Image (cartoon, rainbow, N blue to C red; front, side, top):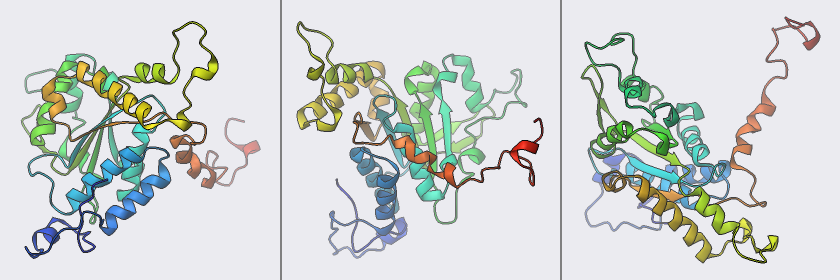
Length: 303
């Protein structure tokens, strides 16, 4: 993993700009805040080291002020089968940096399969029905609502991006390239302090066929590949199948605007499901939280 750091550098971009010109950066060192993020992500998400490395790398660049100006902090496309932690890792990052997994602005792309549904994201233009009643989901107030004094980052998640209409993909081109979105009432939204995440199941069937081949005479159950014992060659094949499926689906303009394309590897029996830890907080909730204060399950309303 390539990490940008020098002399314990962990502050804002101004710290990096004030460094003496004769100081040589040490790529083997990581800032304190990036190290804390790396540790938290590895605690919350299991078995996806490559994805964690890429996220921490981009975050370290933002901390040192080395990310390209006029673009989002990072543009990620996460590929892989369902249940490998693609959504969970975004929530874990928000939880680690701003204290709440709900800080993620999640867009379910299955709800935007038709062009006219884009109005829910940017609002209706003047003269159209519902212009004043439609509140855009991607307004500046919405994406900045979880900023803190220490961390001014937004987390935007487009879930199952392959299900969206072409209109949403075209909308994303401007966001991924110029970090700018124009709403229906001509207001500008700035995404230069946002990390854009997109998830997709593209290539999942090809990955499954690599792990569990279904063709051939005399095929035995033992011929299936154990995810716990994936070698480097099989892992490379899985990653290549995911990237090739994405390139077939999306245009070159879209793919070229991505900073990182990460293929999440299938989890084996030795890996607890990454979402399992997200339910650990349930044990700490009061058992009678669903009941009226002072009441017992036997006397709760409706019983």
